[in-house]
Image 1 (cartoon, rainbow, N blue to C red):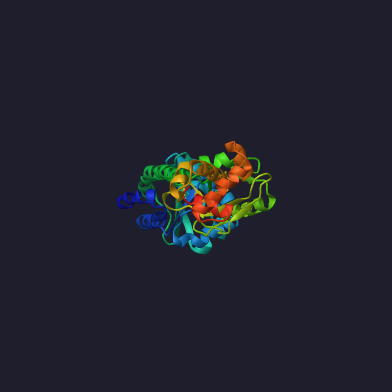
Image 2 (image 1 turned 90 degrees about the vertical axis):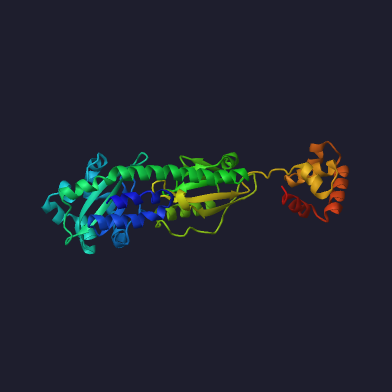
Length: 356
């Protein structure tokens, strides 16, 4: 078991390592399968060994996680005790229990041991499953398994911290290029967002009670479908790639794209599942006039006008902002066209935005 505990550190930076680690724990403990379950929030996207795949699917599909008689032992497990079937149920209760008969027995499983641990403040249990031939867990075996609890707590808590740092880094990088982004967990709740997103939220698009809410009903329906998929789909299921168009009342439409969360940020304890990136949520930043003048050999006055146009103003509004008449602004614009080799205002703006 000591060699298995030494491998737990691998899961801190590589969440996909959990399956192999649990397989090794099974081999050391004489068990056939293992599943990681959060004690207070049960979801189907938990790490498990391949040997339990069909059983876990049935377990969640028919809501057995809401009526598992073994859940009564969770407080004892979180107190440091390794719980087993015989600790919680009598032999007669085990024989007659519907969950045992409909979920465990059909797949050859009969006996279990649960090792409680913490991921930050969240309670989790590593459950080991044995077949009838392998027999129940004896006291001497549970004493050995109890040594895993503190190491699992250390690994899970550190994994959660590393995941949060990774998420903050991801959204922070997008912040630097003024790209609004939020991150959803397995329940569809917002667990991270950057300043660019906060700056763009309003009555049309906002976060309420950790949920992303949009006024556009069609877009909200699409967003609800994404959340439903995140909640129900296996951990590695592909997310929808079609962007969601969100229409706003007094501003231009926003395009929302759903991107997967990978690496250390995608650990089971943090629960991050998707990053939502918004295009056109906030006004475009005006390019620096000095840079425009240098790039295209414009006069300072021409560069100031072009910068305002690239920032989204009309030529009339730009002239008013600069304190010049519209004809002067039009002449400066014509000169900018000639110097940049462009012929229309959108063409000029697109060219300038490439260096912004």
